Length: 139
Image 1 (cartoon, rainbow, N blue to C red):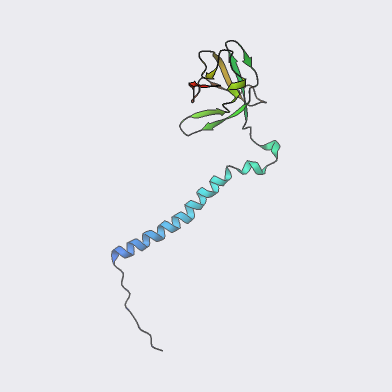
Image 2: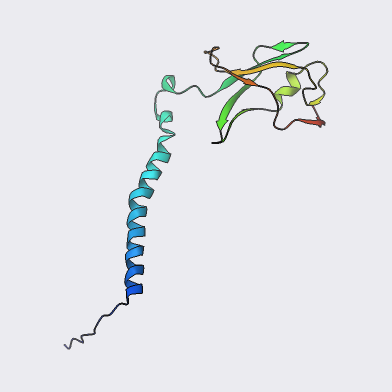
């Protein structure tokens, strides 16, 4: 059997490109996996007994100028990274509204709107406006 010896030569550019690719794959394997593990940790509370789950759902307490609702559906808070938004079902306004409300707009009738965990009334947030207010959208 005859072995043919070839001279293997690589230019500096090719060598740098190979080193860059190797560093990229090693970096991805090390740091990408770490980021994936941290992402998966957010849902670990679901593996705990339900009694140890964090309080996520909040109740709405709505007070208008002419009536009030001590428990009006439920909602939650959402941290966008820039602000914290309170979210609840829009259809609660059909059932929990002031007498003069006939659209998705408060029309100066809102006195107070709080969201709070059901078992912790001292830990509340105050809401003052609707992101999707629309006086043309009927209830």
